[in-house]
Amino acid sequence: MDSAHSLPIGKRLTFRILLTTLIGLVLTLMAIGYTLLLSWQLEGGAAAINEAGSLRVRSYRLAVVLEHVSSTTAEEELAQFNNTLADLQAGDPKRPLFLPTTSAIREQMRLVQADWKKKMEVYAKNAMHETAAQSKQQAITQYSEALPPFVENINKLVSLVEVELSEKTTWLRLCQTALIFMSLAASVTLLYLLYLWIVGPVTRMQAGIARMSKDDLSVRLPIETEDEFGVLAQAFNQMADRVQTVHRTLEDRVQEKTAKLQAQNHEMSTLYDIAGFLAGPHAIEELCRGFLHRIMQRISADGGTVRILDNQRDNMHITVHEGISEKMVEEEHCIKTDDCLCGAAVNQGIILVRDFRQMNQVKRYRCEEEGFFSIAVFQILAREQAIGSFSLHFRSERVISSEERRLLETLGKNLGVAIENQRLIAKEKEFAVSQERNLLAQGLHDSIAQGLNFLNLQVQMLEDSLKRDDMQEISDIAPLLRAGVEESYEDVRELLLNFRTRLQDSNLESEMRNVLSKFQRQTGVHGVIEFVGSGAPVAPEQQLQVLFILQEALSNIRKHAQASEVKVRVENERDFKLIIADDGQGFSLKTVEEKGDGHVGLHIMRERAERLAARLDIFSTPGAGTTISLHLLRQERLVA
Image (cartoon, rainbow, N blue to C red; front, side, top):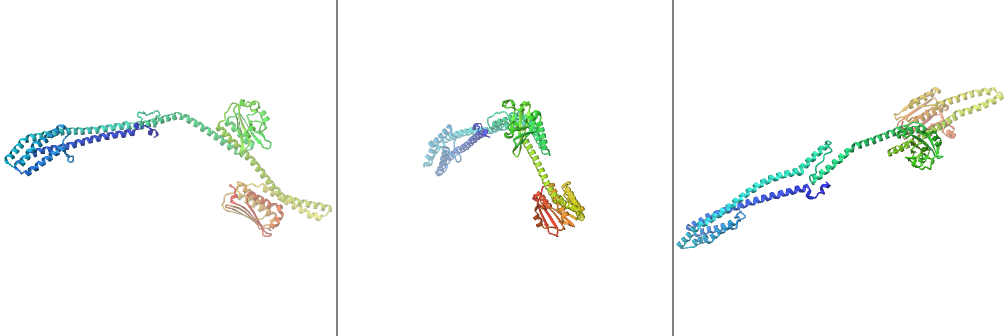
């Protein structure tokens, strides 16, 4: 549209159409105006012929009036004749009435007028004013003798006007005929111009678009004009050139895009493959070895290493290697971070060497001595901190593309996260083992250690009785020794049972029923367990702690409560509750609190409740039994 507006006004199609319309309109109006003028002139000439004809009649009538009628009537006829003659002379546009303006007609009109004024009017007036009969008759005779030449002049005037009107009638017909032909010619011309200026270009453009829609990209429109259609044809040709150019390069682009997509798919598959491997339960060395092997296959490297950073000593240790000689591994199994490129990458970031020959030849590069031509070293990052590096060695020049560089950076971060996760898992396992050992130690202290201490005192007393040969005291001590040994044996069995407990298929309900059933078989105490609610299952790690708390509570009941019935109630709604109640002898909470950590069973239950982030409440009254309540809030529950 901008190009169309920038065209000179003389070349615009709209201007040409407007100019042609205006010319046709002017010519038509001129033809119609000329036709109207001829009609008006014919109408005026016809009226003039009528008036001129009436002069002949009036001249004869005047002769009769002069001879037979009064002078008054003659004067009226004379006045009417003069008026008619004046109208012919001056014309009357209202009627219309006028004589043609040719010289012959005007000359003849002057002759008629002069003849009337000099002769006919004079004779008529003499006849009207003469009183003597002879004189009046003489005047009438003179009028009658002059009348034929006068009428002849009027006839000649009428003939001249008729000839003139006949010519104008011919011109009127010719003009009307010309107007008809002009209309036909204008219509033909207009149709031709419309076809030439609009229909033709539109048809050619439509044909060009139809051919292009059929993949004929060689079509071009002829630029025959410099108007809007010429600009449009030029734009169409430019579009066709561009489309043809794009079509020619489309295959190359498709191949390029296909190659890029294949590279991206390969990159994504590599990323998924290595990320999936790193997410598995592998040891750190196995992670590094599998990572390096997959990376070398992807990048087609001839050798590679994975080095882990020792932050305390600022050393880099080769964890795994492939394609590297043992001699090089022996020399560089432990290096400082600033001793080689692999160590420097930890502090500097990515290091790419395309050709060792272009490096500083003063400094010794062990990779170059191994026969490698180029090397690429990337950081291993965990929480945005470098924990090591991995290197890829090539025996020929190898350019690492930006896509490969981005992939290797991402994989370096994934490896760092995997290594850090394994370290955290190891620490978590170590912490869990430490906690279980602490609980085991507390259990041993609460049961076996106290029992052994009791047995030690009884043995000392037995030795003293043997020295004194007091058989009665020996007889009293022996059953106590046997009871102490049996109690210690039962404590060991219970501890072993508790610490070997494992959930089968994460079914807390069945395991709790089994624990209560074993308790009933061992103690003979009646037990009832009830499960209420339909909440989501508790996470396995939380289920195990709940089961340990139940076991510890039943163990305390067995040792201290002397109960006849135990009731266990599990409420699993949005919150989780475990309630253990017995009808035993109970105890004083104040007395237990004064002992501090001396009552290891309660202390162990509290520690396990803290692990769950749950609240443990103990309600007990001497002689009225004990109730233990474990309350795990919904926001502290883990997803199973």
